[in-house]
Amino acid sequence: MQIHESKKELHLKDRNSALISQLFDLFRQGKREQAAALFSENGVFCYPGSGPLHGNWNGRDGIISFWAEQDSCSGGRFRPEMLDIVAGDHRVFLLVRIAQNESFSWSRVVVYEILNGEIASARVYEDDPIAAEAFFSAGARK
Image (cartoon, rainbow, N blue to C red):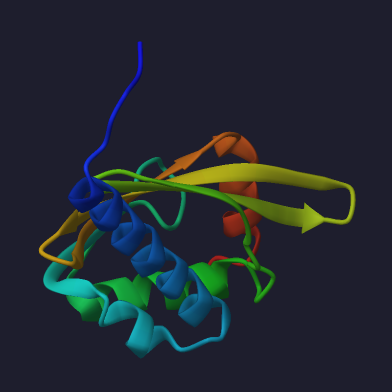
């Protein structure tokens, strides 16, 4: 069975992939306000679990606060490496590797929902939630 996609569908997927690639590049460059501007004004970043980052971080300011807290909780060691990106018409799946140290890392998937060319939401899925919680708890504010 062959699957045919229209040029419009491919174009939308390419645009969505480019949007998240741009977000990742801005994030890695420390341009957090520019990165947050790619989210809708009411965008939400969701980090599930019980660690210091858990919860829904609402709006662009909330997303910037999440990123700052993530940096703080990691002691400045949070440097994700992009491994893969898969885009659909309304969602983008970003796979990154996070190195805890030279000998241990884990993977994270972030699922982005795209509406009208903006990021409406993001949700984190850690492949090793225990390692992630320990990593981010080590630098968490007391």
